[in-house]
Amino acid sequence: MNRNNLAIRRNVSLKPYNSFRTQATAAFFCHPKTNEELMTILKEFSNEKMLVLGAGCNLFFTKNFDGLIIKPDMIGIKLLNETSEFVDLEVGAGEDWDRFVEFCVEKGYSGIENLSLIPGKVGAAPVQNIGAYGTEAKDTIVKVNAIDINTGNFISFSNKECAFGYRDSIFKYNRQYIITSVVFRLNKNFRYTQKYADLNHEMNNIRHPSLRQVREAIIRIRSHKLPDINELPNAGSFFKNPILTQREKEELLVKLPEAPFYPSGNEAYKTSAAYLIEKAGYKGLRKGAVGIYEHHALIIVNYGTENGRDIVNFMHEVQQAVEEKFAIRLLPEVQIY
Image (tube, rainbow, N blue to C red; front, side):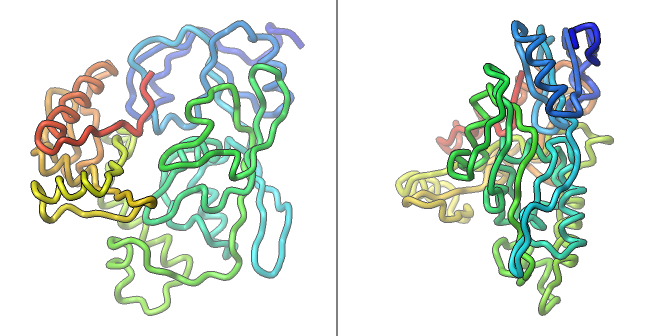
């Protein structure tokens, strides 16, 4: 198979492939459906700059991409192992994340229900170590299977080898690996444990919540707080929640006595980026075609621009305002190209 026989598109608009709907063009674009097809593409385009794209829900473009964009489309959920306590499932990178969560809840497999309604593909979950409501993807990932762009060889990473951190992993900065599937270990015996204030409040009148009830509660919370990307283009949580030292925590409490904090290990504390943005006066604020969502200060929304630089400029303005008021530099969770 050579380049002419591959399903490669040229000069493709990237506006439909990022949830901010910014305009850019990719020189080449493909969506391999099998590992073999991906390996052939990597061989034929070995001299091209490459970018791997999932659902495009955690990135946006500020300029054209002069290279090959690969959108893995491997699908399928395979049972690898099962005991009385857990199941191991191998899931294709191209599977829709929330559909996978729904599948697990229907089967009675627990562990990722708190990650309901997060947009994106399964292959993106380890890259960002997606998390919400006291749960992170790393809590259930056993193994990540990938192909090395440089060698074309298969490689598997254990949970430890993924070097997971807060919204972080080895895959986020080391772009030589293309994830093809992820293996999850999920529990067959579910018991609700209180982890997150909003969720606890939503479950307050339910004595022993079921797995389905937890998922439905998460969906209600997210639907109320987060805008529909089809109506107001956005990339979800734009900034990471800051991790502070004990000293930084005490300094912030002088300025914001009611600031929320959560233990983050090694005498570190996580605080709320949304809270800081709101206290800086930006919740619901709009500048031209870009602004902060009125119901959640962590969401930057696009009211009509196709220029990614407009979003970057607004991001810088928010960062500067928070830093000037509270001496904390917010870092973007969203990838910018």
